[in-house]
Length: 290
Image (cartoon, rainbow, N blue to C red; front, side, top):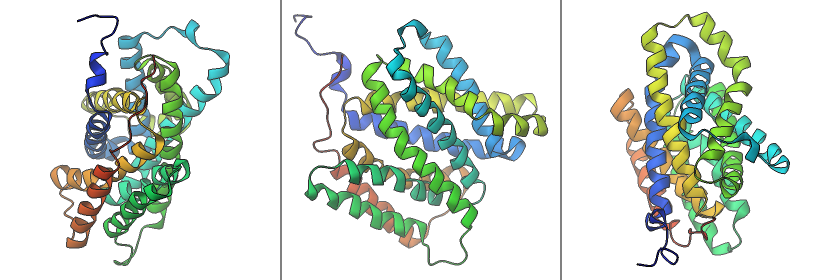
């Protein structure tokens, strides 16, 4: 086969499969983070994940800072900012509300991005269908809702929507995950003001730090890297709607890791968001950037 005309091996992997793998890993990392949260708080856990993630990425990728263009600096800073606080606000929500519920509320951020970025009116059917599933997953009519937890999840959703936009922007300009190796250290710096005091106050034992380092390898290193690669080849609308299966994955991880059992209506919500996510795969591929 002629090497000059052959496609890169990565092009044979459907971008949606990269996104789904990333979502599974992210929800696994969030479920595992609950143990660390009990020791150093949500802000401290998020900061440790960003710090260990930064160290791992810098060691593996070794990005060339001289390659950073001045016009890209604002995007890199914004992506670092929203990445750090997306994780921080989400873990603050998980302290107060079930994992699946937190993911469902947070998902409204990328869902809004998908709707805004969409150019075909017919495609609005899938975000609308996903929204129905999200409502069933959250069950707002059941008892009292922790409004503070909901507020943190909504803030995380705003950051998540911006994260998707700027991840695609940065991913188009930097090969592989080199952009991630620049923005995660930025995220660690921005979240220091919240995370460092909690870590120092918690005085964590060695096992807590080792667990946080292991979680950081899952997310942000592997999972965020997969997301960046997927976003290089998908539209905002397709990726944002595909994320509708993430509340379902959050519920599943809540069951397996945290023993948070869903209701019948939540199971129905899972089915609805999965259908919307699968439908969003069609037409979601972008031309691959060099």
